[in-house]
Amino acid sequence: EPKVRSSGGVKVVSIVGRVTEQNEVWWKWAYVLTVANTNAEPIFFDANVQFLDKDGFVVDEKEEYNLSLGAHLTNRISDYDLINLPSAASVKSLKVITAVK
Image 1: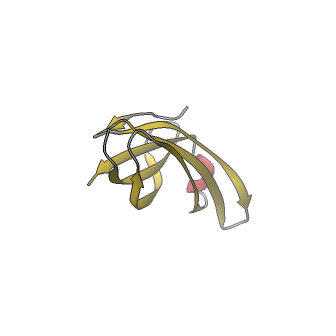
Image 2: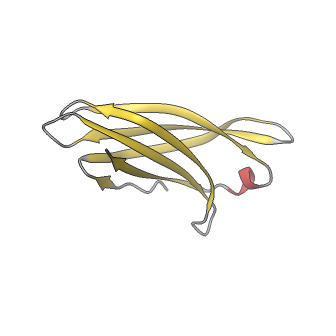
Image 3: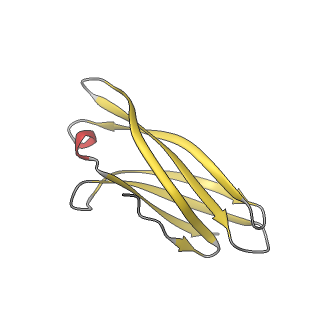
């Protein structure tokens, strides 16, 4: 279940992720983050994608820097993170924290 939140005009609409590749060392966790600008002005922000275990502890994280959105626009950001085993196998959910610049 994704954790969805809003900060400084950036609304995290959704985040979905899944393992798209794996081997005996790491798993490739791909994700699609959908964000919206609720402001009437363009915004610039960073996003921290956190990979959480069943208890909500951060197993790994991926920073997305220098993102931007035009006024009242919604955009999808697709990326991935390579997470080493055994941590990769414990990921149960994703969470996003945004910071407007």
